[in-house]
Image (cartoon, rainbow, N blue to C red; front, side, top):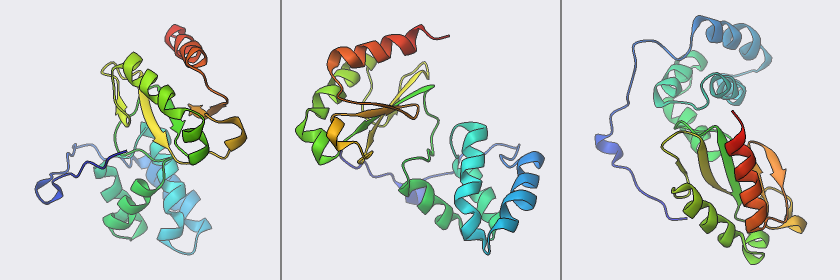
Length: 177
């Protein structure tokens, strides 16, 4: 996977008038989550999960709001969001195909699976289809090397993937309402 640099010096954070941390989320964070941890940094990952569960991703504006509540810097929040594959800073599709890219999956043909999905969906790795239905992610090892190549689709693990098995999964997802 190639890294695509962003021109962060001139990057503006899109914001909306309505805060991402609604009164309900604020109460959950301040009354349920924060008391369980000694520091705001300790409460960060649980807070991020709550926000992502609510919106499907964690916007840059939400990261700034979270930093204020937890009394940490926005950079600390962004560091955690960008480090862990479980968090998304952009909207993702209804169906998230996370293809394992470990050495075992590489040796067992994960690239053919990725190439097939890219062709079928018309997107590249770390992109989402225009209709918002599918996202394709490249993931680090998911711990199933004896079943390579493997993937997670919305958290469900699929092992020993073949092109026909991928087509079956796509078909099942496409048929769901």
